[in-house]
Image (cartoon, rainbow, N blue to C red; front, side, top):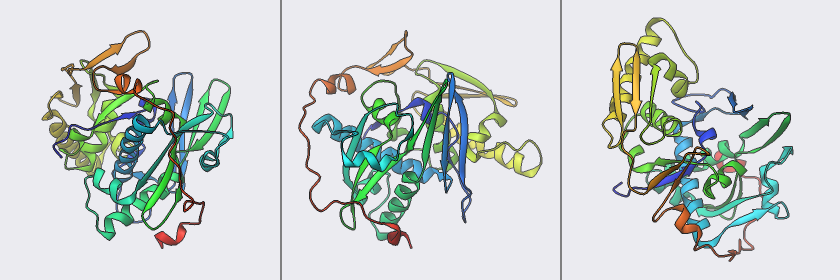
Length: 314
């Protein structure tokens, strides 16, 4: 992958250990809750989410950004697609962004091939993502909606709608940029999982110092403090962080059980909105692209409808 691709990701959704390096076999239920500002964010679903599922989500966000810039692909609560997100209790936003794409395109953006196995892998990840509900608690207000909503048009094409937090990130409200160019240089799942979290936690020119054991939860979902498992995890974390430290614009220094991770380089085209803490971009990025948006709406086509897709994953 020679392209320096980046996706706009919601930092609150990105800085916790939700997408894990999982063992083969049946997955546990997903139930992760973390504090966020004066409330919390909770992810719940029938299956834990893995690093591969995160790759599919990032591919969806990349396609969403492309189509939003070109077609202004927004939907509101009057659109039938809105129902796919299954909002419960409070609705924090009344519109979102839709995407029309194919399994093949998503697989390629994940860095995979277009074999039947790769296509099935994308489909299974989309199913898990669409079954995941994200609950936001802001003070006394509580509301939940699915991470994704989707319909199927034929064997390979899908229409997707995004959770409202992703939609806000795509429209520049609050976001961090995850480099897919960097992600594809990281061979291991622990390195990819850590890279995604650290990108959300550490702005360019900033640094974070943390105990090595404190990073375990971002990769495996829990922390093991003793024994062979803990030693093996520390070894894998050191290897993953060493690989991240080799990326341009990253620095990793070990000091006994502590590690300092920094992004010392402010890349050309970035500036930070200090008052709000929101990272924004200049030059050929979201701010410039928003000036070119139109209100044109792409027709979804009569071949797309809500169907039971469980048979695809038998």
